Amino acid sequence: MTVLEKDKKYLIQCYTTDDLVFTNGKGMYLYDDKGKKYLDFSGQFSACTLGHGNEEMAEALKAQIEKIVSVTSCFATEERAALAEKMIEISPEGLEQVMFGCTGSDANEFALKLAKYYRRGGRIISFRRGFHGSTAGAAAATGKSEMIQENSGISELLPRGFVHSAPPYCYHCDFGKEPGSCGMQCLKYLEQTMLHEGGDRIAAVISEPIFAAGGVIVPPKGFWQGVRELCDKYGALLIFDEVVTGIGQTGSMFACQYEGVTPDILVTGKGLTGGYVPGSAVLCRREIGEEMGKISLHGHTHSCYPLTCRSALKNLEIIERDGLVENSRTTGEYLHEKLVALKEKYEVIQDVRGRGLLQGIEIEGNKSADKFDLGQRLYEKILENGLITELESRRNLENVVLVMHPALITTKENVDEAVEIIDNSLKDCLK
Image (tube, rainbow, N blue to C red; front, side, top):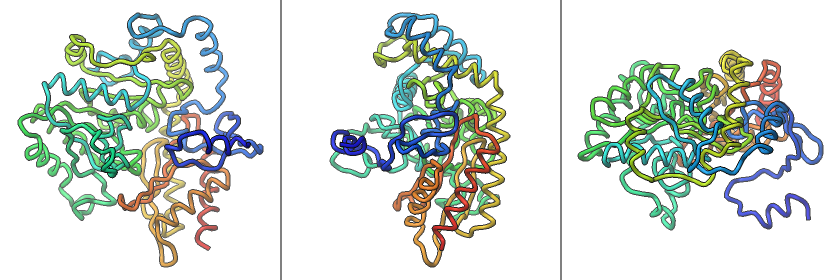
């Protein structure tokens, strides 16, 4: 049997998979089993911050494997202590304690537990179109209407006490308003949700600063400052899920720093370790972390593993040394400009939005093409032409967005190559 045949026969196919077998990668490129190369503008769900096959990272991990790996969170290691200190150093002021995990989902679980325990219970408010993970609490906070919400056979696995508010999605405003004249209706609706759905207590509001999986939804300026004020007004904690947007992806170390809004709890993952070893982190205000220290409520065998910590430390060292956060900002601006130029060229591109190296283009249909069919054909043609992106497209969510969040090492030459592939693919799909 071929690799694909084995994969399809034996592996539980939880994800929609393309019929490709990747065998190796270097820098911005992945190579399939036929030797064809693909420019990776997905960053493998934004985890691959340094690109593929970084030799410096490989050497650091090899050295760590030879030193010490299998140590549970019951014991301290120098790697764990060093990473904890580094995370506090690079995070917004006021976040002074940290816990490490394995994935973004389990990190969000811990953040939700932190909020619930610290606030002595209460509702969790999140936003429609937001995504927070696939474990129970993280999936309940997810407002993107994933299968677990839609399927009555498994939806009862979701815990109670989660409420979804209207997202700050200016292109698809839930209230039919126009940007600039809307009076920030989504923020007003959030306050109404807090008043009417919060019961006697709200534990927290959780959200991505930029809704990545929901279609690169960038809230209007001032929205997060308004949310921060509402949380303070009603005694709720503010949790920022920066699993995708953190570690430089949006042109600042964390996306929340762009507007100067500091959450009570900040979650990050994916790019934390450069994608070389699974890992995540939850940062919080000291009094919240110390309160959690009174009980044993959360942990995994591989939390705080020395290999995870070494991967994150080396990744952050390279990012800071090579100015990759700044590169994300400047190259991201260049990518945005090039995508806006495409929008002027093709009427099916109705919106371009993003920050740094997190960008999305919203597709609409035309007289000869349904937008959902067009989006799928475009994604497949782009992949066939050698560019890896992601497609956010569900009929019940109404939007079709081509999503890009490439590695922080992306160059303007990479951008030119990617945009040319998108351009040629659009020409083919619109013939």
